[in-house]
Length: 329
Image (cartoon, rainbow, N blue to C red; front, side):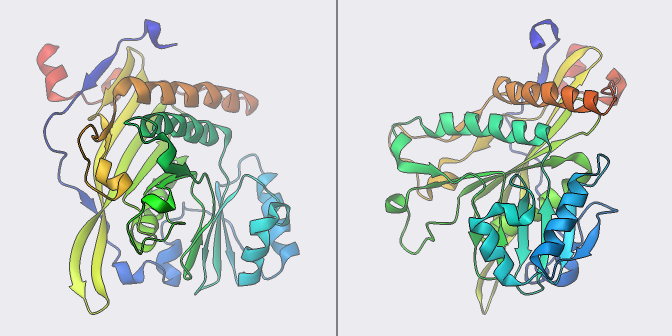
């Protein structure tokens, strides 16, 4: 698909721009209002006090072709979450992702579309292939969308990776991943960032990669979020989530344009130790991210076609070139 496209990239060798810090205080992230504050406008809500009620609301949401990617359920008993871990049919969807606040009994259900699933699988394969390198192929595990539980919140990502238990530092929970992937539509970007905050601040993840897909245009945004050491408290050190990298991939009338640095996952972020001789950071060049975007857009076109829609074109003027491209123009 891209053989006939013009490829332009702004490859930065400098440090990333100043990180973008979240505004919500760490201690408030699981409060009733903060937990749901970043859901897309118009997200449907319901009472999920029984298994039948949850399943009915989920099935109704799945049956709406114009429906939201999220569903917020209130008053969901903890026992329901334990049951659906072993029996996904109870929730009415095997592909749904859940995030449950044990303290407020609020359940956020995310419904990944086919473009999301393809994006997660494509980038997941790229990550796994890189993690297999450096002679470390048998020392990590892919946990997929497995449920993580810290006693206060239970959450499922689109994909996740972690060193095997025998390669973790003492005291590290073997069920907690170090690298996490979250995908969604562009209108849910704020919620995806909230998801990153939960992984980084509540589950000890070291890197969260967000893939944000525009619903009607060939446009993908990637963000890499990492924890930043904040102020110390009586309860210990606090961490704030910050955005360390942003990469934009667009298909315009003139061709494919990628703006941003190569995606980098530091070796220490994944393995929780410094690299030794022969080991290095994981760097994903633009051509790898281009392959992921191509996979997403192929399925997006099919998804739009079934809805009798066509992808919207991105005019050249909508894309802001980097300084290097401006100089060459």
